[in-house]
Amino acid sequence: MSASPSASPYPAAFASEPSGRLHLAVALDGAGWHPAAWREPGARPGELFTARHWAGAVAEAEAGLLDFVTFEDAFSVQSSSPEGPDGRTDRVRGRLDAVLTAARVAPLTRHIGLVPAVTATHTEPFHISKAIATLDHVSRGRAGLRIQVSQLAHEARHFGRRAVPLPDAEAHEEAADHVEVIRRLWDSWDDDAEIRDVATGRFVDRDKLHYIDFEGPHFSVRGPSITPRPPQGQPVVTALGAAGPGGDDSAAYGLIARSTDVGHLVVRDAEGARTAVERIRRARESAGLCAQPLHLFADLTVYLDEDAQAAGARKERLDALAGAPYGSDAAVFTGTPAQLADLLQDWRTAGLSGFRLRPAVLAHDLPAITRGLVPELQRRGVFRRAYEADTLRGLLGLERPAGRYAARPAGHCAA
Image (tube, rainbow, N blue to C red; front, side, top):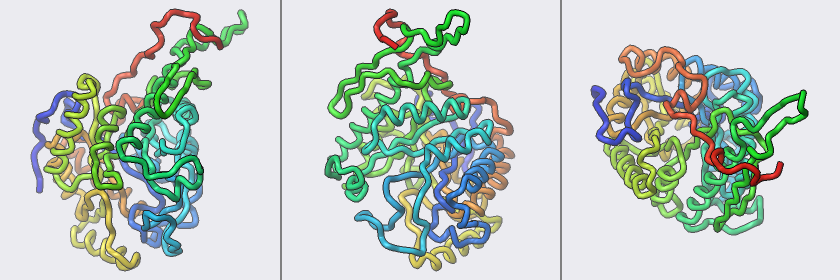
């Protein structure tokens, strides 16, 4: 299954790092992605809704030099049914707010990126903009967000504003507008808008705050933001390339191509990754964004052990506890860290620059990633041995963008 690294056939915007190194992230969700994970030794289910649980997980990820962690979130309790809560009491139910959780652990970390999930469908971009900008300030430049779409009727009933599902294209167009408003609001303060001059009594330069005057079919937002420009200028925006209710992933790929810095792909093999990368490349070309870099990560749910048979047996035992085989939208890997390293090096030839790994059991598989997989990748020369940047954009090799309004004539916005 192993393959040697090779040059990507795609433009620089889709290529791996020039050094040939991979990017790695982990997706944090409760006790782990397997529904029986909370029953495993070391899971400590009594701490799932505490800051200690999340701080410990993020600290472990940072010790493994990972690029970022994502925090799952939604507007409904976890369920195995798309129709609504399934009534099961043998699985983890309930979540903490992802943005607030990320903000809580931010001061406890120094390097790793923090990327909470945010649902665009039922939230206002002004609120999300200032929440993520605040997270970027609290973390000193390590914030991102994973924008997601909700097509679930039981989530829509919490708000009572409209019926869903929407046509998939419309739902993702709205998410794209949501991101555009957020990005404009992040730019609505110039970097030097704050004067903070006690002697003259001037705290802010009113000419360096800008109306964004966004008008679209979904949002009408004047701005400016109430939060100064984030340290990164633009925190990192990500999205998952998941299929809509009809099974078509075109709208999600379009959102990744037009609106994000990192796209997460749910594919089954290297050939599927190659097809997805090519489709997103074409969509990005159509949007006129070829010159802007875009990272594409494949998602994998992982069960890691020192012996491949032990990993498979552990999954079978967890499935038995859950009462059904584990199913995932992403590929599922069982095996050793060395075998996973082989797979990652194989898949990267499809044009991927990284991977987001979903630990099946957080207490077991996250340390297996940081203490088993990472050293294996380091031995192969394809993963960092130290953090080289203090911001998430820096870790991903993304430049800090200039504010889009900074060159405008002064005086067009009152403080």
